Image (cartoon, rainbow, N blue to C red; front, top):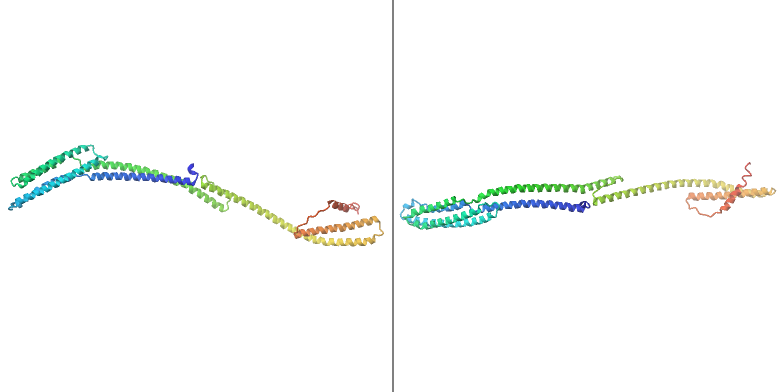
Length: 402
């Protein structure tokens, strides 16, 4: 769970897996290179070993100076000259063989030292050392005899005997090398090749196992990256596209418990806020629409009130004027009438004037409402209003039957 809490930890874990993969591949490569280097080094050791055939060839070369030019021997004075040259060539060949033998044994000693440190060293290596040591002493003795016989080559009487003896010595050295079971460096290549084949098979199995392990780790890393990064980003992109298309009820569901999951939660919260703001705006628009409709209705009422007020004002003005004129005329006509009737008529006329005046005020208020002016707040005497109503209605019962 610790590796799934943040993208940074996922990246660190992925980098760690890559480093492990790189380390395993590096170990596999270094192991192969080490095995190759060891094989090449062993082959170099075997290749650097002195060859017995070369030593035998150098020993046999001692016979070449002993070959006589038979035709030249018949010429006067040529025999001594040929014997002298033969002596010189045999001495030079002997010196050359001695040098080659010393070089051969020097390389052989070095080879034995290197061979003793190799895992494919033969078990009888010490015996081979002793055999070569004995052979060296014997060859040295034979070469000494060969060198002592060189002086006899100048003697015409003993030349042939000395030459045959020296050829016999060379043959003894050659036979001595064949009689001994001497080690042949190339023979050590076969066990080394077998060892190299075993190492190759083991290394091939090791590399195959490492490759399978690295492949498994790579597939796991690819699967984890897809599940932990690619798939959540695709889900977030799909959710954003649906919300952008107008599906505000859609919510992105991620369980990665990392920054992408937090981003999805923030996106869902933003969508909810946007949906809430949109709903509030819709309600406000509906409310404003109702208010506009109500205002339109009130405007219609205002126009109606203005028309009604204009239509009522004219009759009210006529009634008020007629009531004033009637009161002026009745004051003369009712001089001889009963005082009670005169008071009643005067009161009715006064009531007509008062109520018509009130109706004019009402129509003025209707006109003010229609014009949209703010109405004034006034204080009224409720008691006086009640008295006026009572006074207006107290005579209704008297004239109900009329």
